[in-house]
Image (cartoon, rainbow, N blue to C red; front, side, top):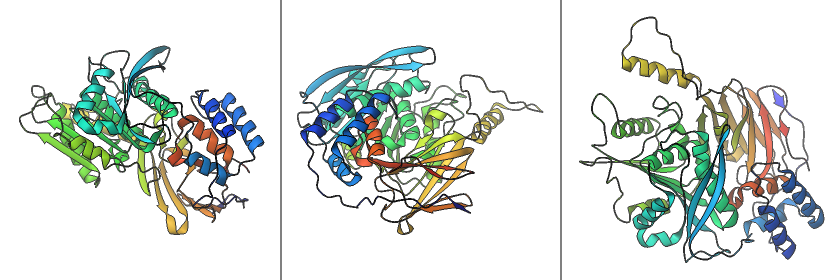
Length: 457
Protein backbone atom coordinates (compact mmCIF):
# COMPACT_ATOMS: atom_id res chain seq x y z
CA UNK A 1 0.00 0.00 0.00
CA UNK A 2 1.47 3.36 -1.00
CA UNK A 3 1.66 6.09 1.62
CA UNK A 4 2.01 9.82 1.07
CA UNK A 5 2.15 12.05 -1.99
CA UNK A 6 4.83 13.38 -4.29
CA UNK A 7 6.95 16.08 -2.65
CA UNK A 8 9.21 18.85 -3.87
CA UNK A 9 12.88 18.17 -3.12
CA UNK A 10 15.71 20.48 -2.22
CA UNK A 11 18.84 18.48 -3.02
CA UNK A 12 21.47 18.40 -0.29
CA UNK A 13 24.78 17.63 -1.94
CA UNK A 14 26.99 14.98 -0.40
CA UNK A 15 29.80 17.50 -0.15
CA UNK A 16 28.57 21.04 0.38
CA UNK A 17 30.18 24.05 -1.23
CA UNK A 18 32.34 26.21 0.97
CA UNK A 19 30.43 28.96 2.77
CA UNK A 20 31.99 31.69 4.86
CA UNK A 21 30.41 32.34 8.24
CA UNK A 22 29.82 36.06 8.63
CA UNK A 23 30.02 38.13 11.84
CA UNK A 24 26.21 38.18 11.71
CA UNK A 25 26.16 34.36 11.77
CA UNK A 26 28.48 34.24 14.77
CA UNK A 27 26.44 36.87 16.64
CA UNK A 28 23.23 34.94 15.87
CA UNK A 29 24.68 31.69 17.19
CA UNK A 30 25.89 33.33 20.40
CA UNK A 31 22.41 34.76 20.98
CA UNK A 32 20.83 31.40 20.15
CA UNK A 33 22.96 29.51 22.66
CA UNK A 34 22.27 32.09 25.35
CA UNK A 35 18.56 31.13 25.29
CA UNK A 36 18.99 27.63 26.79
CA UNK A 37 15.95 25.91 25.20
CA UNK A 38 15.04 22.76 27.12
CA UNK A 39 13.39 21.18 24.08
CA UNK A 40 12.56 21.72 20.44
CA UNK A 41 10.17 24.56 19.68
CA UNK A 42 11.30 27.16 22.21
CA UNK A 43 9.40 30.32 21.17
CA UNK A 44 12.41 32.58 21.76
CA UNK A 45 14.72 30.28 19.76
CA UNK A 46 12.17 29.86 16.96
CA UNK A 47 11.72 33.64 16.62
CA UNK A 48 15.48 34.19 16.49
CA UNK A 49 15.95 31.40 13.92
CA UNK A 50 13.19 32.70 11.65
CA UNK A 51 14.56 36.26 11.77
CA UNK A 52 18.10 35.14 10.92
CA UNK A 53 17.04 32.87 8.07
CA UNK A 54 14.86 35.62 6.59
CA UNK A 55 17.71 38.13 6.79
CA UNK A 56 20.49 35.85 5.53
CA UNK A 57 18.57 33.88 2.93
CA UNK A 58 20.55 30.71 3.68
CA UNK A 59 19.70 27.48 1.89
CA UNK A 60 20.36 24.06 3.44
CA UNK A 61 23.68 23.55 1.63
CA UNK A 62 25.09 26.86 2.82
CA UNK A 63 23.85 26.36 6.36
CA UNK A 64 25.32 22.84 6.55
CA UNK A 65 28.73 24.22 5.57
CA UNK A 66 28.49 26.99 8.20
CA UNK A 67 27.53 24.56 10.97
CA UNK A 68 30.28 22.12 9.99
CA UNK A 69 32.90 24.81 10.63
CA UNK A 70 31.04 26.70 13.37
CA UNK A 71 33.25 28.02 16.15
CA UNK A 72 31.20 30.73 17.85
CA UNK A 73 32.37 29.60 21.27
CA UNK A 74 33.42 31.93 24.04
CA UNK A 75 37.05 31.62 25.21
CA UNK A 76 37.57 29.64 28.39
CA UNK A 77 40.66 29.12 30.49
CA UNK A 78 42.23 25.72 31.00
CA UNK A 79 41.69 24.17 34.43
CA UNK A 80 38.78 23.56 36.80
CA UNK A 81 35.39 25.21 36.46
CA UNK A 82 32.04 24.85 38.24
CA UNK A 83 28.46 24.94 37.04
CA UNK A 84 24.94 24.23 38.29
CA UNK A 85 21.72 23.04 36.65
CA UNK A 86 18.28 22.21 38.04
CA UNK A 87 16.39 18.94 37.54
CA UNK A 88 12.86 17.90 38.49
CA UNK A 89 11.45 14.79 40.15
CA UNK A 90 7.66 15.16 40.08
CA UNK A 91 6.79 17.97 42.47
CA UNK A 92 10.36 18.06 43.80
CA UNK A 93 13.38 19.63 42.16
CA UNK A 94 17.10 19.56 42.83
CA UNK A 95 20.12 21.69 42.15
CA UNK A 96 22.87 19.67 40.49
CA UNK A 97 26.38 21.05 41.00
CA UNK A 98 29.05 19.86 38.61
CA UNK A 99 32.70 20.43 37.86
CA UNK A 100 34.37 20.32 34.50
CA UNK A 101 38.04 20.32 33.67
CA UNK A 102 39.28 21.96 30.48
CA UNK A 103 42.66 20.62 29.27
CA UNK A 104 45.45 22.91 28.12
CA UNK A 105 45.05 21.47 24.62
CA UNK A 106 41.46 22.76 24.27
CA UNK A 107 40.80 25.36 21.57
CA UNK A 108 37.42 27.00 20.79
CA UNK A 109 38.05 26.59 17.06
CA UNK A 110 38.79 22.84 17.26
CA UNK A 111 36.40 20.16 18.60
CA UNK A 112 37.70 18.03 21.47
CA UNK A 113 36.65 14.80 23.19
CA UNK A 114 34.54 14.74 26.37
CA UNK A 115 34.31 12.23 29.23
CA UNK A 116 31.23 12.23 31.48
CA UNK A 117 32.25 10.88 34.90
CA UNK A 118 29.79 9.28 37.35
CA UNK A 119 30.72 9.00 41.03
CA UNK A 120 30.04 6.28 43.59
CA UNK A 121 27.58 6.40 46.49
CA UNK A 122 28.59 8.94 49.12
CA UNK A 123 31.20 10.55 46.87
CA UNK A 124 31.23 13.67 44.68
CA UNK A 125 31.65 14.64 41.09
CA UNK A 126 34.90 16.45 41.76
CA UNK A 127 36.40 13.40 43.43
CA UNK A 128 35.39 11.23 40.47
CA UNK A 129 36.80 13.72 37.97
CA UNK A 130 40.18 13.58 39.70
CA UNK A 131 40.01 9.78 39.76
CA UNK A 132 39.39 9.77 36.01
CA UNK A 133 42.39 12.03 35.47
CA UNK A 134 44.57 9.59 37.38
CA UNK A 135 43.21 6.64 35.40
CA UNK A 136 43.86 8.40 32.11
CA UNK A 137 47.31 9.69 33.09
CA UNK A 138 48.87 11.78 30.34
CA UNK A 139 45.88 10.96 28.10
CA UNK A 140 43.64 13.11 30.34
CA UNK A 141 44.95 16.05 28.34
CA UNK A 142 42.79 14.85 25.44
CA UNK A 143 39.45 15.20 27.27
CA UNK A 144 37.12 17.78 28.71
CA UNK A 145 35.96 15.95 31.87
CA UNK A 146 32.45 16.68 33.17
CA UNK A 147 31.48 15.35 36.60
CA UNK A 148 28.13 16.10 38.27
CA UNK A 149 27.30 15.34 41.90
CA UNK A 150 24.02 13.45 42.04
CA UNK A 151 21.40 15.11 44.26
CA UNK A 152 18.58 13.61 46.32
CA UNK A 153 18.52 10.22 48.08
CA UNK A 154 22.01 8.76 48.24
CA UNK A 155 21.28 5.53 46.36
CA UNK A 156 20.88 4.73 42.69
CA UNK A 157 17.32 4.16 41.47
CA UNK A 158 17.57 5.03 37.77
CA UNK A 159 14.77 7.59 38.09
CA UNK A 160 14.45 10.39 35.55
CA UNK A 161 15.99 13.07 37.78
CA UNK A 162 19.11 10.95 38.21
CA UNK A 163 19.42 10.55 34.43
CA UNK A 164 19.03 14.31 33.98
CA UNK A 165 21.56 14.99 36.73
CA UNK A 166 24.12 13.74 34.19
CA UNK A 167 22.53 14.57 30.84
CA UNK A 168 21.80 18.23 31.59
CA UNK A 169 25.34 19.12 32.67
CA UNK A 170 26.52 17.27 29.56
CA UNK A 171 24.24 19.41 27.39
CA UNK A 172 25.29 22.57 29.28
CA UNK A 173 28.94 21.94 28.45
CA UNK A 174 28.27 20.88 24.84
CA UNK A 175 26.49 24.17 24.21
CA UNK A 176 29.43 26.22 25.53
CA UNK A 177 32.57 24.31 24.57
CA UNK A 178 33.59 23.01 21.17
CA UNK A 179 32.99 19.29 21.74
CA UNK A 180 33.48 16.57 19.15
CA UNK A 181 29.98 15.05 19.19
CA UNK A 182 31.32 11.74 17.89
CA UNK A 183 33.77 11.41 20.81
CA UNK A 184 31.63 11.68 23.95
CA UNK A 185 32.25 8.95 26.53
CA UNK A 186 30.79 7.95 29.90
CA UNK A 187 32.39 6.08 32.77
CA UNK A 188 31.83 5.57 36.47
CA UNK A 189 32.51 3.41 39.54
CA UNK A 190 30.03 1.49 41.75
CA UNK A 191 26.86 3.64 41.75
CA UNK A 192 28.53 5.51 38.89
CA UNK A 193 29.01 2.16 37.14
CA UNK A 194 25.27 1.50 37.43
CA UNK A 195 24.70 4.94 35.95
CA UNK A 196 27.12 4.19 33.10
CA UNK A 197 25.19 1.06 32.12
CA UNK A 198 21.92 3.00 32.39
CA UNK A 199 22.92 6.03 30.31
CA UNK A 200 24.65 4.01 27.59
CA UNK A 201 21.71 1.62 27.22
CA UNK A 202 18.86 4.14 27.29
CA UNK A 203 20.59 7.09 25.59
CA UNK A 204 23.07 5.37 23.25
CA UNK A 205 22.81 8.11 20.61
CA UNK A 206 24.99 10.37 22.78
CA UNK A 207 27.95 8.07 23.40
CA UNK A 208 30.90 6.61 21.52
CA UNK A 209 32.06 4.30 24.33
CA UNK A 210 31.48 3.52 28.00
CA UNK A 211 33.46 1.96 30.84
CA UNK A 212 31.51 0.69 33.87
CA UNK A 213 33.61 -0.26 36.93
CA UNK A 214 32.04 -2.28 39.79
CA UNK A 215 28.60 -1.45 38.37
CA UNK A 216 25.65 -3.41 36.98
CA UNK A 217 22.82 -2.84 34.50
CA UNK A 218 20.34 -1.01 36.76
CA UNK A 219 17.06 0.50 35.64
CA UNK A 220 13.67 1.23 37.16
CA UNK A 221 12.04 -2.13 37.78
CA UNK A 222 15.42 -3.63 38.74
CA UNK A 223 16.49 -6.34 39.22
CA UNK A 224 13.85 -7.77 36.87
CA UNK A 225 14.62 -5.32 34.05
CA UNK A 226 18.41 -5.73 34.23
CA UNK A 227 18.85 -7.50 30.87
CA UNK A 228 15.85 -6.14 28.95
CA UNK A 229 17.60 -3.11 27.45
CA UNK A 230 20.90 -4.67 26.45
CA UNK A 231 19.90 -4.85 22.77
CA UNK A 232 20.25 -1.06 22.77
CA UNK A 233 24.04 -1.36 23.21
CA UNK A 234 24.73 -2.89 19.79
CA UNK A 235 26.48 0.23 18.46
CA UNK A 236 28.29 1.44 21.62
CA UNK A 237 31.73 0.19 22.66
CA UNK A 238 31.19 -1.00 26.24
CA UNK A 239 33.60 -2.35 28.83
CA UNK A 240 32.40 -3.69 32.17
CA UNK A 241 34.96 -4.48 34.90
CA UNK A 242 33.88 -6.25 38.07
CA UNK A 243 35.32 -8.30 40.92
CA UNK A 244 34.91 -12.04 41.37
CA UNK A 245 34.20 -11.53 45.08
CA UNK A 246 31.75 -8.62 44.67
CA UNK A 247 28.80 -10.55 46.10
CA UNK A 248 26.72 -10.62 49.28
CA UNK A 249 26.17 -13.72 51.38
CA UNK A 250 24.14 -16.46 49.64
CA UNK A 251 21.38 -16.74 48.58
CA UNK A 252 21.41 -13.03 47.70
CA UNK A 253 23.04 -12.08 44.40
CA UNK A 254 25.46 -9.23 43.73
CA UNK A 255 27.54 -7.47 41.13
CA UNK A 256 29.31 -10.60 39.95
CA UNK A 257 26.02 -12.36 39.18
CA UNK A 258 24.49 -9.38 37.36
CA UNK A 259 27.60 -8.91 35.25
CA UNK A 260 27.88 -12.58 34.35
CA UNK A 261 24.21 -12.61 33.31
CA UNK A 262 24.63 -9.42 31.24
CA UNK A 263 27.75 -10.83 29.59
CA UNK A 264 25.89 -14.00 28.65
CA UNK A 265 22.96 -12.02 27.28
CA UNK A 266 25.21 -9.76 25.19
CA UNK A 267 26.96 -12.84 23.84
CA UNK A 268 23.59 -14.29 22.83
CA UNK A 269 22.81 -11.00 21.05
CA UNK A 270 26.09 -11.23 19.13
CA UNK A 271 27.34 -7.91 20.48
CA UNK A 272 30.93 -7.56 19.20
CA UNK A 273 31.37 -4.15 20.89
CA UNK A 274 31.19 -5.52 24.44
CA UNK A 275 34.11 -6.47 26.66
CA UNK A 276 33.60 -8.05 30.09
CA UNK A 277 36.47 -8.38 32.56
CA UNK A 278 36.08 -10.32 35.82
CA UNK A 279 39.00 -9.71 38.18
CA UNK A 280 39.90 -12.83 40.17
CA UNK A 281 40.14 -12.41 43.93
CA UNK A 282 38.81 -8.82 43.79
CA UNK A 283 35.77 -7.56 45.70
CA UNK A 284 33.93 -4.27 45.27
CA UNK A 285 37.11 -2.20 45.52
CA UNK A 286 39.93 -2.40 43.03
CA UNK A 287 37.86 -2.88 39.83
CA UNK A 288 40.15 -0.66 37.80
CA UNK A 289 41.46 -1.11 34.25
CA UNK A 290 45.21 -1.66 33.81
CA UNK A 291 47.33 1.46 33.49
CA UNK A 292 46.78 3.10 30.12
CA UNK A 293 44.04 0.65 29.06
CA UNK A 294 41.10 2.97 29.69
CA UNK A 295 42.42 5.75 27.48
CA UNK A 296 43.24 3.22 24.77
CA UNK A 297 39.71 1.76 24.94
CA UNK A 298 37.99 5.15 24.80
CA UNK A 299 40.18 6.47 21.99
CA UNK A 300 39.14 3.54 19.79
CA UNK A 301 35.47 4.47 20.12
CA UNK A 302 33.61 6.76 17.75
CA UNK A 303 29.88 7.37 17.91
CA UNK A 304 27.68 5.88 15.20
CA UNK A 305 25.14 8.67 14.82
CA UNK A 306 23.44 6.84 11.94
CA UNK A 307 23.88 3.10 12.56
CA UNK A 308 22.78 0.91 9.68
CA UNK A 309 20.97 -1.40 12.06
CA UNK A 310 19.77 -1.08 15.65
CA UNK A 311 17.02 -1.96 18.13
CA UNK A 312 15.78 0.35 20.86
CA UNK A 313 13.73 -1.08 23.74
CA UNK A 314 12.15 0.97 26.54
CA UNK A 315 9.34 1.04 29.12
CA UNK A 316 8.98 4.77 29.71
CA UNK A 317 8.18 7.64 27.35
CA UNK A 318 11.32 9.51 28.47
CA UNK A 319 13.40 6.83 26.71
CA UNK A 320 11.41 6.77 23.48
CA UNK A 321 14.22 8.04 21.23
CA UNK A 322 16.82 5.72 19.81
CA UNK A 323 19.30 7.31 17.39
CA UNK A 324 17.26 8.68 14.45
CA UNK A 325 13.92 7.13 15.51
CA UNK A 326 11.52 8.30 18.20
CA UNK A 327 8.24 6.76 19.29
CA UNK A 328 6.07 9.88 19.44
CA UNK A 329 2.80 8.02 19.95
CA UNK A 330 2.60 4.79 21.91
CA UNK A 331 0.00 2.07 21.42
CA UNK A 332 -0.25 1.35 25.16
CA UNK A 333 0.17 3.22 28.41
CA UNK A 334 3.76 3.26 29.76
CA UNK A 335 4.36 1.53 33.05
CA UNK A 336 4.17 3.59 36.21
CA UNK A 337 7.38 2.43 37.84
CA UNK A 338 6.55 4.25 41.08
CA UNK A 339 3.83 1.68 41.86
CA UNK A 340 4.38 -1.94 42.91
CA UNK A 341 3.45 -4.60 40.38
CA UNK A 342 1.04 -7.39 41.27
CA UNK A 343 1.41 -10.87 39.78
CA UNK A 344 -1.11 -13.55 40.76
CA UNK A 345 -0.11 -17.20 40.94
CA UNK A 346 -2.51 -20.13 40.92
CA UNK A 347 -0.17 -22.32 42.95
CA UNK A 348 2.75 -21.99 45.34
CA UNK A 349 5.94 -20.84 43.63
CA UNK A 350 9.60 -20.49 44.53
CA UNK A 351 11.46 -17.18 44.65
CA UNK A 352 13.19 -18.09 41.39
CA UNK A 353 9.85 -18.77 39.70
CA UNK A 354 8.52 -15.46 41.01
CA UNK A 355 11.55 -13.62 39.62
CA UNK A 356 11.09 -15.20 36.20
CA UNK A 357 7.40 -14.24 36.23
CA UNK A 358 8.30 -10.65 37.06
CA UNK A 359 10.82 -10.57 34.20
CA UNK A 360 8.18 -11.86 31.79
CA UNK A 361 5.75 -9.22 33.09
CA UNK A 362 8.14 -6.40 32.23
CA UNK A 363 9.25 -7.97 28.94
CA UNK A 364 5.64 -8.16 27.70
CA UNK A 365 5.28 -4.43 28.34
CA UNK A 366 8.36 -3.33 26.47
CA UNK A 367 8.08 -0.86 23.62
CA UNK A 368 10.48 -1.60 20.77
CA UNK A 369 11.68 -0.03 17.56
CA UNK A 370 14.17 -1.49 15.11
CA UNK A 371 15.68 0.09 12.03
CA UNK A 372 17.63 -1.28 9.09
CA UNK A 373 19.09 0.89 6.34
CA UNK A 374 19.38 -0.22 2.73
CA UNK A 375 21.78 2.41 1.43
CA UNK A 376 21.96 1.27 -2.23
CA UNK A 377 18.18 1.66 -2.48
CA UNK A 378 18.00 4.75 -0.23
CA UNK A 379 15.51 2.86 1.94
CA UNK A 380 14.77 2.42 5.65
CA UNK A 381 12.82 -0.50 7.13
CA UNK A 382 11.19 0.07 10.52
CA UNK A 383 9.64 -2.55 12.80
CA UNK A 384 7.86 -1.72 16.04
CA UNK A 385 6.19 -3.31 19.04
CA UNK A 386 3.46 -1.40 20.91
CA UNK A 387 4.25 1.85 19.08
CA UNK A 388 1.67 3.75 17.03
CA UNK A 389 3.67 6.57 15.40
CA UNK A 390 7.41 6.70 14.74
CA UNK A 391 9.24 9.92 13.95
CA UNK A 392 12.26 9.60 11.66
CA UNK A 393 14.88 12.29 12.19
CA UNK A 394 16.50 12.72 8.79
CA UNK A 395 20.00 12.96 10.17
CA UNK A 396 23.05 13.77 8.04
CA UNK A 397 24.13 10.56 6.34
CA UNK A 398 20.79 8.79 6.71
CA UNK A 399 19.53 9.32 3.15
CA UNK A 400 20.76 10.68 -0.15
CA UNK A 401 18.27 13.52 -0.53
CA UNK A 402 19.00 13.90 -4.22
CA UNK A 403 17.02 10.67 -4.75
CA UNK A 404 13.56 9.52 -3.64
CA UNK A 405 13.46 8.07 -0.14
CA UNK A 406 11.69 4.80 0.68
CA UNK A 407 10.39 3.99 4.16
CA UNK A 408 8.87 0.61 4.95
CA UNK A 409 6.97 -0.09 8.13
CA UNK A 410 5.34 -3.46 8.57
CA UNK A 411 3.41 -4.14 5.33
CA UNK A 412 3.25 -0.51 4.17
CA UNK A 413 5.67 1.39 1.94
CA UNK A 414 6.09 5.13 1.38
CA UNK A 415 8.32 6.53 -1.36
CA UNK A 416 8.86 10.17 -2.17
CA UNK A 417 11.29 13.06 -2.18
CA UNK A 418 12.30 14.78 1.06
CA UNK A 419 13.83 18.23 1.32
CA UNK A 420 16.37 19.64 3.75
CA UNK A 421 14.92 22.41 5.92
CA UNK A 422 17.25 25.11 7.31
CA UNK A 423 14.62 25.84 9.96
CA UNK A 424 14.63 22.21 11.11
CA UNK A 425 18.43 22.11 11.08
CA UNK A 426 18.70 25.15 13.35
CA UNK A 427 15.84 24.07 15.64
CA UNK A 428 17.74 20.87 16.48
CA UNK A 429 21.12 22.56 16.55
CA UNK A 430 19.79 25.08 19.09
CA UNK A 431 19.09 22.25 21.53
CA UNK A 432 22.12 19.98 21.21
CA UNK A 433 24.72 21.87 19.11
CA UNK A 434 25.46 18.56 17.42
CA UNK A 435 27.31 19.46 14.23
CA UNK A 436 28.09 15.83 13.40
CA UNK A 437 24.44 14.72 13.27
CA UNK A 438 22.51 17.69 11.90
CA UNK A 439 18.80 16.88 11.43
CA UNK A 440 17.54 18.04 8.02
CA UNK A 441 13.87 17.16 8.44
CA UNK A 442 11.42 14.97 10.38
CA UNK A 443 9.05 12.35 8.97
CA UNK A 444 6.14 10.96 11.01
CA UNK A 445 5.27 7.35 10.09
CA UNK A 446 2.02 6.14 11.73
CA UNK A 447 0.60 2.64 11.62
CA UNK A 448 -2.42 4.05 9.77
CA UNK A 449 -3.16 7.17 7.70
CA UNK A 450 -0.54 9.05 5.74
CA UNK A 451 3.12 9.76 6.32
CA UNK A 452 3.85 13.42 7.09
CA UNK A 453 7.01 15.41 6.41
CA UNK A 454 6.99 17.93 9.21
CA UNK A 455 9.09 20.79 7.79
CA UNK A 456 7.88 22.32 4.54
CA UNK A 457 10.06 24.21 2.04
